[in-house]
Length: 401
Ligand SMILES: Cc1cc2nc3c(=O)[nH]c(=O)nc-3n(C[C@H](O)[C@H](O)[C@H](O)COP(=O)(O)OP(=O)(O)OC[C@H]3O[C@@H](n4cnc5c(N)ncnc54)[C@H](O)[C@@H]3O)c2cc1C
Image: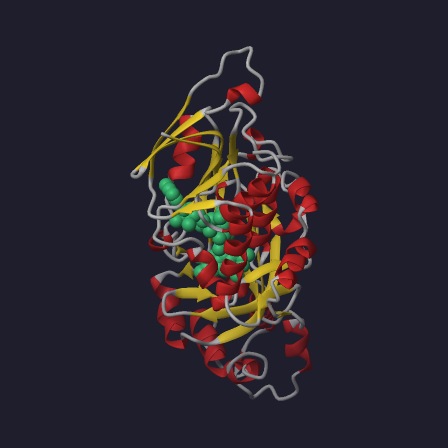
């Protein structure tokens, strides 16, 4: 049995950051990672350049049953704090757009930063270490925190650890080949904590066979549009794929979508389509040709085939033109599904925030147990927010564990 102060399960962004902070406080800290190396998601993030934070981070960029929960942690470890660390390690970075900060070089630099800080803080990292079982031994009622030592027993394939504080940083269900497991949710349930049922977020949509017949041949075509669903709206690119729709606007809205509901796409977000029809002097032009002034030509043709057979503008009745215009500005589409956890950038839902202290990420009903990062029901929008949550929640737990 190895005795230590803090065991962290999961060597991803949140787990490593928490380990650094706990180590800096003089806590003997061990990170247990079942994969052969740490930080696999960091390595592939941001197209290999890691979008490590977003300068505009606020609670509004997160989805959670309790939209206020993330505020405290985000306020105590801000994007500027992470940028200071990036600068301390001489990592060159740039703002791509909308406050999104990326490494100029490679995501590996962020992993090196974390490893260097962890080593300086005396953190021990054990890879290829799978946790099988966790038990909590109840300290005597009279024991204070200091006497509550060795509250958890953590059984792994390479021995058993006993620790005072156990931090669960096992991430979500997205992309199993990178190490994702449901272990964090199972552990939460074992200790009686509620879970908000996880769902795939930041994920491409699949479409019905009919829609695909027209759109799939346009795979690779992208357009700038605004997409809305259940009160959320994003203006960015939409990409047509051979299976459905992707691109930043679609990934963003997917986090808010529920099966069976529709999304609304405004194909001409800066224009009133009816006004365009009224202003068009040459009524002999076909609808598809007319629309190709504003939309990619192949897309305009496919959209007409799917919705309104293309003919000369003058051949439509005023009512038909009004319907076409309405559909251009409010194209309602019901995805048949999403590409699921296989392709989702993140997992929404997770350990219910009601169960945790927003100050420390500690489970209110299980002293010494903490949940941080993506395993918690706090999910960022696209653009560096998920890493900022990983750093901030890891920092919060690292001050307390
Ligand atoms: C392709 C892709 C690109 C992304 N790009 C960005 C981006 O640019 N910016 C951004 O903000 N977010 C991005 N994200 C999201 C971001 O990577 C995650 O939100 C973030 O990594 C979550 O950190 P985490 O530490 O909570 O979980 P993870 O990084 O998933 O870490 C969890 C760790 O726990 C380990 N683990 C799981 N179960 C066990 C177990 N039973 N025992 C031991 N270890 C276990 C896993 O192997 C993993 O190493 C991207 C995600 C993907 C998939």
